[in-house]
Image 1: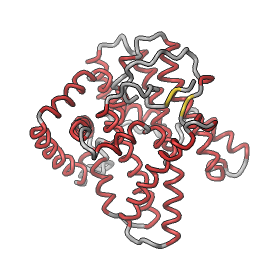
Image 2 (image 1 turned 90 degrees about the vertical axis):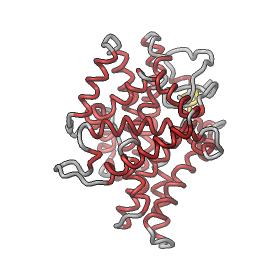
Image 3 (image 1 turned 90 degrees about the horizontal axis):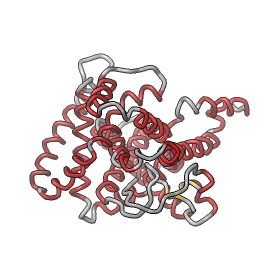
Image 4 (image 1 turned 120 degrees about the vertical axis):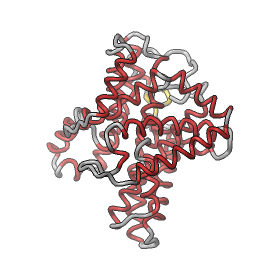
Length: 356
């Protein structure tokens, strides 16, 4: 019996549709960022997609972490063994599996062409998250930290996490730097989950007011995200201390609102599907992204950076979804489902575990 993968290892039953939509929006934005910046670098220019990526930068990852913390309260009261199975082993299984897969595909690049170099790379990746997999790695770390810190009052813990985000931390170690920059959003999802769900309900109940608020947010976010900063080391106004935290939090709220408004419409269908399989996209998008970019650039069929970026983004999102569907009922299902052999606690009966 395998457990379908999700950001906290949840089952398919009883999902919250708007959360899937929000996750779908986030994963598309993440893939878009990697695809667009890669194409821009390869083609030596920028296109319209670069503006979208820049606009989304303040809130793209904050919302992903906020959504990832929404359902932590459902499992955090369990004993350490059961909790670790759902929130630590689950993520580490996919991190280690895809670390090997991605590293093998990039053997020459990561190993220097020697088996010893390859082993050294794998060992180093246990403490320095590799490539795009840092997100999955960090979720396991956040889960452990939050369980250990349960005795700290929520207000105090949120304040400390906010301070870590505000104070520039640049050690060069991804684990430390990203922990400081992102933990506050994960905690906000955990501690403020009831308020976030009420916000989604209120957005649907008052669509006109919600749309007006989103319009104001879009203008403000765009201004800060696209305006250069006068302070060295901070490329835009949105990257400035305090401003970055505020835009991340407000942007996360905006994505929740957008997802809640979109979910009843057909427009949300593809995003909701992406959200249900977001980790499959996150784990596997790198290969179709790189392959599509290489094919398009070699063919010379398109010379517009924005168009090439859009095509690469679309393929990088859709290809993992096709792969996940093809292997779902085959021996290769372990790529996106954690086999029973890799559980350290018995699986519980299905319960309401939306979009995790």
